[in-house]
Image (tube, rainbow, N blue to C red; front, side, top):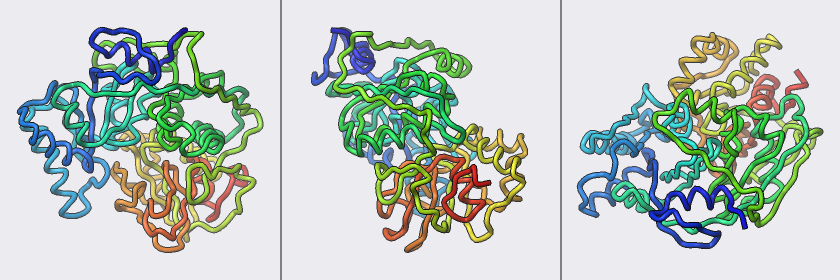
Length: 422
């Protein structure tokens, strides 16, 4: 019987490179270990308690302040200081700082620090994002991250794999965000619990890398352990322009065993909306009441890349419209590089004149951290990945998840809206 992508990559990262199968418990070598300003301080404390002294490889440890950065209070300042001191003490090769980096899951791919075929563990649930590059990437707790920083190893149960096949030509204003929302709506938030998700088919092959990163970013919202878009020419073009070291892509065997196969026809699919209070409460936009919104947030590790903001800029330029003055519109580029790109394009001025607050790169509002926290009963349209009660502020606020085009149209019209209405 053939092997899945997850089985291939895990096997390649065992010391004897022997075959593995779903359900096996194995020790694996890691290529990259990452954490952020929330999870790294706990990992650093656990690392110190181990008494090992030095990290296993200073080139492969990535500590990125992004959740409460720029520091929102004294506690967050102490957390980011912990990261900086540890990075200096351990002589980590890659340093990340406000004004020079951004959101971890945007920064690492754009800098070529995560590559196809690699095994990545991160102290953040959205580490699964890197599956768009053909890497096996998964989130772990901070004590597990401490062990990985010290030894370069971790243990895994080899996951079963679910296959998702997408056919048909996407309609206007349908993007990777809509594909993953539709998928989560179909299987539920625990439909892929501790399973790998392989995203395949002609419609996936036609996606830009930014859309692929959006799809794998939300694997965890389906309960998945990791997710993959198979390596192809799109991956190669993106990676080869950025790679900082050699890499080896892996491919699933044609006769690989999947626990289930799910097929989707996108030819008539509309933009999708995840309604409160769950990422699997998904409906086509025509089925959602066009209610008034108080805030629109465009950004996050899900949809804060240059191509996402290009969608917003295109809508503003084509329509000549401004954002509704009664709506707080917050646009946050996913990295400093994205910020510079939109500055060069003139979109910083475009967004500002349209009535948006454009911020330095941060996770910020996505987790209710700062720079966009919601009050009771407020309604927000967000391009982020979660809309559970209290996720972006008050537990009685309501968050609708959408793609950037729907978010921009809603910001212009002051209510949930399809871009065609403009």
